[in-house]
Amino acid sequence: MNTDTRKIAVIGTGKTGSYVAHQLGEQAVLFDEDNKPTTSELKKTDAAIIFVPGNAAAEIIDIVLEAGIPAVWGTTGYEWPADLPSRVKTSNTKWVIGSNFSLGMNLVRKAIEIFGKGSDLLDSPNFHIHEVHHTQKQDAPSGTAISWQKWLGKESVISSDRQGDVKGIHNLHIKTAGESIYLKHEAHDRSVFADGAIWTANFLLEHTMIEPGLYPFSDIFDRAYSELI
Image (cartoon, rainbow, N blue to C red):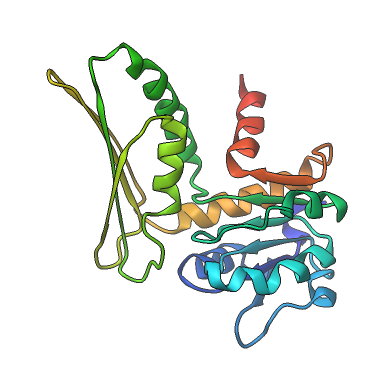
C-alpha cells in the first residue's frame, strides 16, 4: 500500500499528538476528548498512534484491542496490565510501546549499553541520570530516564527538573575518583518524536512477517538496524 493512502488514527492531540497530526496531514484521523475513539471508527483506519496521559490509557485499551489494528503507544507514567501481551497476541495484532520515539535516542541506547558493560572495568563508578522536561509533563522521572537506567544495567541516581517548554534533555554522568564520562541527548523539536512514531506505524504495516504481539520500540528499531548491517 502506498503510504500516502494510509489512514492513521491519532488518539490524543496534546503536545506530541498534535505534531503527529501535523506531520500526517490528510492521512490523520483525529480523536480526542471531544471526539472519542470507537472500535467501529478505528477499524476504518490502518493503524493508530496514541499519545494520551497514563490516566487515560485504561479507558481506551479495550477499544483499540477490539479494533484489531496495529497501534503505537507513546503513553508514559502508566503501569500496563500484566496480561496485555497475551491479549494483544490473542487479538492478532501488533502493538509497540515506547517512552521515546526518537530514532537518535535508540542510537544512544546502544552507547549506554556499552557504557554499562564497560564500566565494570572502572574503579568504583557512580552513575547519575538527570532529565529535564517542560513544566506540564506529569510523570517524573521521565519514562526515558527510567529506560536509560534499564539500558545501563547499573544502580543509578535519577533526578528530574521541569523548565518552561523543554522538549527533553537527558544526561548520563559516570564518575570515578579520577575521571568523568558524560553522555547527553537533547530533543530540539517534538517533531522528532512524531516522526519516530509515524515511522514505527509504517514499519509495522510494511513488515507483515512480524508476529502479533506487544513490542518495545527498541525491538522494532533493532529489526530495522539489523537490515542495515
